[in-house]
Image (cartoon, one colour):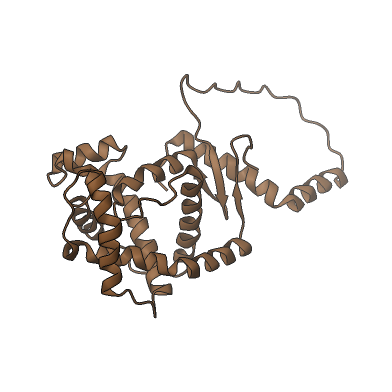
Length: 262
């Protein structure tokens, strides 16, 4: 998750305390019972209560949309995930791009990243992330009008989509870590044939580039990217079963707009 402001950090802390109270009701009940059974003591003199500081005018609180084993997913995370899709031009153009699907992706990613912490690997460096993005930005159709191969054009494209280079590197690093984990855990034994790569290029990518009136990259230049997409499709069933198991073992709560954090 991205760095939050001090106000948001304070909100996270309060929400986590509330979440703990609902997950561990026995603890709260035990404390209440202990208080009832304790020896009465003289009530202290009432103290003046400092007035609550009102929220700054115009300040918007970031709503919690899901809690994954104590980790919060915020409304701003969902918005960011939706905006991040422009940096993934090789996805199926008919894929579900709804808000609910974005929330599901964030939940799944959070579950995987939590598992990564239990099985740490060498960190992916900034240079590795930049190299991946440098190769990617040459082939993003929406990037063409900005001349994204230049630093100024790339930065303008990032700003238009609500990102800075630092925030995109952070988000893309998480994506690369997740893909590496999936590949190492599920890719073994899965083979993507050259004809499958060419078929995806001809039947999926070329029509999409034509729709956006952009010049498509050559098959050779993006075959590895297409292979990545096809591998993800192949492992989706295995990954789905594994994620269901993680959900069953842990705690995933999705909050609807009319609901508050537990």
